[in-house]
Image (cartoon, rainbow, N blue to C red):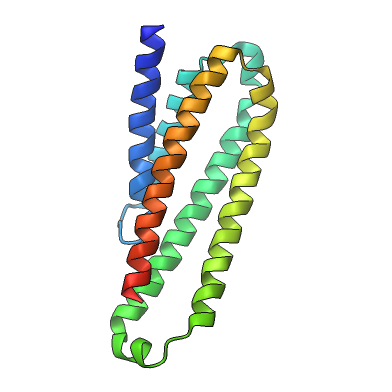
Length: 166
């Protein structure tokens, strides 16, 4: 049991760290490195859950959903970085003619995409989750809470940075 908890904690720490950094629009992390982080995260989650051969057949849709979410996150980060670069080039013009409606629309679009990605991820996890043992469910719950909390903190920090710079 102690060994399983150690693997779970290690997975949490390694998994959450790249997620937090990947949320910042100014983090100039190459796409290949983000892909490596995503692969590492999936392998650690899979190892922490210790899937049985019967459960393994439910993993490919989860992997696809995680990769799609990661690609969409990279696109949102690139869009935010591009917008930030534009703002830095013309800060006086932006301050003279603020467009709060445009800001709200951009934020709504980003949130809608994140919502769709999370729904897709939840749908992908559902069949596997139904086959997990109580011990696996506990490990998954711990992983989920830790990762989601760190993602939320990173997202809030990024949002505050974006709002301050606009």
